[in-house]
Image (cartoon, rainbow, N blue to C red; front, side, top):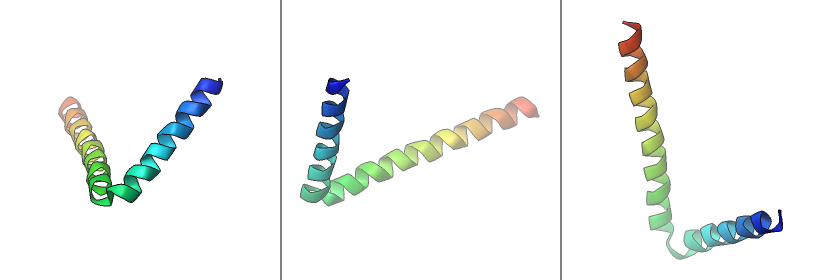
Length: 53
């Protein structure tokens, strides 16, 4: 249980460090994640539309 807590703190610290040292790259990474989520949702919509028609 302690290892999980320590790893969580390390991950949060890394994200904060990354945001302050390379904000443009951090924004690009977030945009990439959101684009992937939107693309996945679109693909699921296409799949279910194809199944239901």
